[in-house]
Each structure stands twice: as structure tokens, then as C-alpha cells.
Length: 130
Image 1: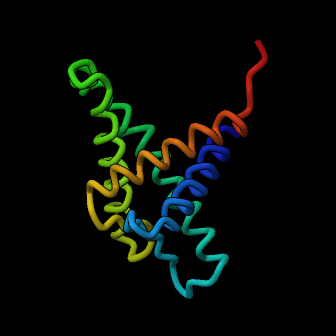
Image 2: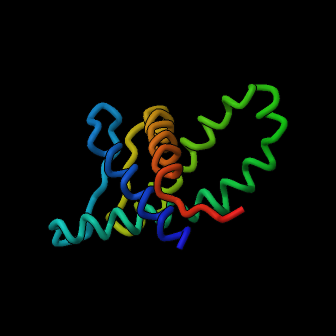
């Protein structure tokens, strides 16, 4: 259940970021490109982003732990931007998916995605009973 909620939140956050024009982050739906295909593309991109964050992001964050201390956590912005760019690179092989034009604008987009994930995560994620 948590994975489904996480994918839905990621898809929504990526959609919101794609609506912000100056960030140059686009979602390219697979053909024929109508609304259903766009939503399915967002869900697949959200799933890929969740998997990249879970697998590769965890490894990078463990290896970069000294950099977190030195930069007081600011390196996380660059790492999250890299993970978003890596997701766009993976989905680019399919001819549809996420497209990030500039790495540094991708860092800003990753910051916006993180904020949306944080806010919606507090509201929507199931809580375990204590």
C-alpha cells in the first residue's frame, strides 16, 4: 500500500513541476498522447523515480555521508537533482517519459518535488498504530 501511495504522490509532484514553465521539466506521454496515456506515463515515471530514490538514492546517500556533514546537508539538493536527472535519462530510452533540460533547473525541480512529497506524505501516507 505504501508503494502505491508513494508512486501516486511522486506522479502528482512531477505533474506539478511539469506545469511550472521556467523549470523546463516536461512529461512526454507515450503515443497517441491523450489524457489516459499522460496519466499512465506519470504513474510509470513516478514508479521509476520511487525505485531510483529507493535503490540508487540510498546507496549514494550512504556513500556521501561525509559530504552531508561537511555541507550541512546541502549536498542533498544536488543528489536529489541527480536522481531526477537519472530518472529522465532512464525514461528517455523509451522515447516517452520525463525530460529535464538543465541539470541545475532539475535541482530546483527536485526541491519542489521533495516539498510536495513531504507535504502530501504527511497527509496521505498510512500511519502505523503505536
